Amino acid sequence: MYVVGTELFVFSPLLPTLAVNYDVSSNAAGLCVTTFSLAYMISAPLLGHVSDRLGKRQVLICCLLAFGTANLLTASAANFPWLLALRLIAGAAAAGVSPSIYALVGDAAPPDRRATWLALTVSGLLVSLALGASPAALVGATFGRAAIFFALALFSLALVALNCSVWPSECRHGGAARRPRDRLAVASLTCRLMPMIAWSTGLYGVYTYLGVGLTAFGFSKSQVARVVMVYGCGAIAGTLIGGRLADRLGAKYTAGVSLAGLCICFLLLLLALRAGVLVDLAVGLSATVAQLFFPAQQSGLANDFPVRRGAVLAWNNSALFLGISLGSLIGGEAVAIGSFDMTLIVCAAMALTGCIINWIVVPGPTLVLTNRLGCPK
Image 1 (cartoon, rainbow, N blue to C red):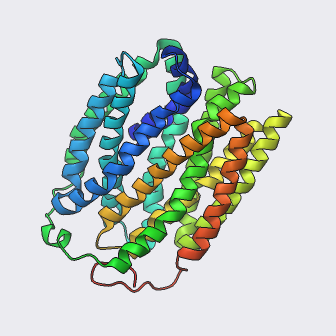
Image 2: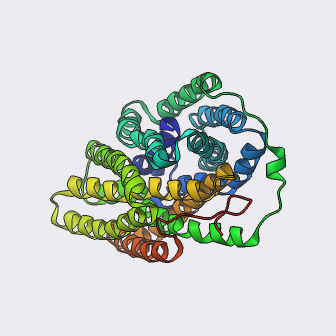
């Protein structure tokens, strides 16, 4: 999860450098995030279905191999179209890594500790913000971006052997994958994914262009890297706290608090940037509040859709990356039309919208009855 997170998050501080290296605008450079996210979004449901049928371990190992290869080629991408093509491949491969790990952990975790276990898993992803993306940005500024992707490729390929030994072989559940679909269950899952789309659109609309926005406010590369590290530390804390809150208070209330708080935090960040004070604190607080949502959303889905947990969590990750794609597009347009200030305002409104949707569509912390597909009735 650390390697996948570094691959995803490092592009925000790298966008100004990529724009210069490939002679494109910052808005165009943001397509690196969009293409990765679109490939992830499209591939995740398919790979989730395959993992439920053929085994999560097999899908995880194959996708790690593809992910490492894509990063190795990214290090030597000669032009911008080739870079975008490799981002598509990396996104598709990552779509088989993250959901498989989440599903394996969800299967192994006791029900009353599932949110906490998933939060610990997600923390591996978010550690990359503080100890991956930020140092990688400094490495890129010193040795060039190729060094970052060579390192990611080596780590990915090394993890193939490790994951072969960590996860036991699985029994294949081909019969489960061929069960008839329940249209009401599909509609229920679709509604449950809407808060994730709103959350990721708002959060990553800001994060994708955070480096561009800070640079516009006069921050140096080292200062941007420092802010990204603060963001990562806040995100790790928020994820761990969110897992415990979701186990104690329920997924609905934890997610609602996160979305409402994120709206407020973005407006506070806007004020901090304009005043030129407490920017690090505002960014760290925003990250902490935002990441309360993710383990709550995951544990809610894992509890309510137990039979098809692999596929459902893959759909959740697909919704996450749909939101990331929308966020990068919306954030880029806001920066192009107005400024980073406008991006913060638009994304604050999106977080508030997600809070309202969450309150409407997510069931409260009551006993969830399930049909034979493991979906809420």
